[in-house]
Length: 492
Image 1 (spheres, helix red, strand yellow):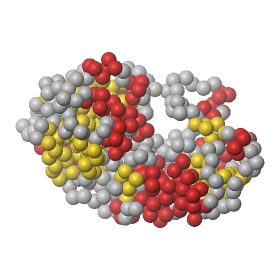
Image 2 (tube, one colour; image 1 turned 90 degrees about the vertical axis):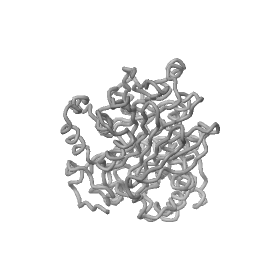
Image 3 (cartoon, one colour; image 1 turned 180 degrees about the vertical axis):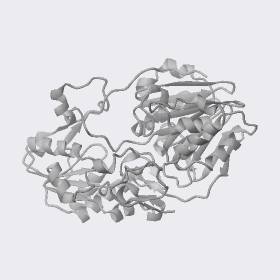
Image 4 (tube, helix red, strand yellow; image 1 turned 120 degrees about the vertical axis):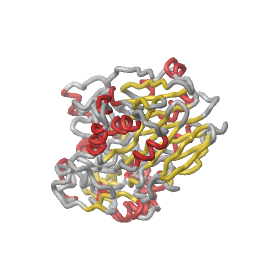
């Protein structure tokens, strides 16, 4: 096993604003005769939006597993020399945003662990809710906990699972994994491998997406989103089913079920997390967002001159709002596509203007105009407040904000890093109070019913917990503080 990297990534650009932060992205490929490291690199490139803290790729040539990972974006971590060194016919890749464990190199994925027959390399998208129970299980197994650094926030749920997969078992990795999956609770899409085989598993609720694709040459790919299949030229075969375990090797794809499917796909994937060119449960994310915008226009009409999006995530809903309302669509904000994170701390003066590092108004478009500004969500409200102030300074006559999701009032325990309830703008405040706080002339959110209808999925197959407080999976036992300001409902 070889690991490399020691970099560190810098700061968020809008001080005080955090969220919604993406889940992670996973990618795996089994393709003898192909350059699997480069396929994985491009797959991760398509999944970069799901995590920007670290990136990593593990490959196997049948004898050894090599891993290259570092802090930073995919394009910052890998170069031609690194990819050339990663030889083999199996690969697992990961882009990370941390929801458990510190944002440090030690927690970058894929994580590695020894097994009785070799090595396991694992990537995880999601968040487990019974991490303490799993850690207790690990500690109970003599010597296994010594593999983990349990201090300073450096231990992740992924590292615990990797350690539990290891050990001197008489069973195969497949049998160990199937037994372990019965103990894991929460949201997970796992992609992992040993020296000979690629594996994938999706939790029984299918909270996070995971798809299976076939390469033109006959190899196989698993990925968080269909957009990652597209970029490597793979044909989508199907989604990995909730509660399904896949083994991919020279014999092809073998499916086994470790739990009954109880689908509760994350609705926020449709609202914000997934790329618009991805399809989830047969529904185009772009189409869902367009429909959310049309529904917003019907639910919250207003007289205005232009509809403008907060780029990029607000753009499809803004187009839908313009289509349904008949108000012209315009690009009133310009986004710097090359600013996501920076290694340089802005000066105090620049920190006060933090949003302008990402967005700047087109004065000639918006001056004197009544604007409908469409965004995907309000979390703390800092970004919307800064944008509205900027638009008014640029001469906007009125600013009416429309949001293509309901008010976020509950934390997520399944892979989205929402703040605690006390930090959420909508908790303890009416829509009118939030409107006043962000400085808008009016504020309208799509209804839960309208949002669900836009996905074309049955509501009982979706997780809407961050909007409704109805959790499909029991939250962690230490979640009392996060849920302190309201009742909790768990739907089984």
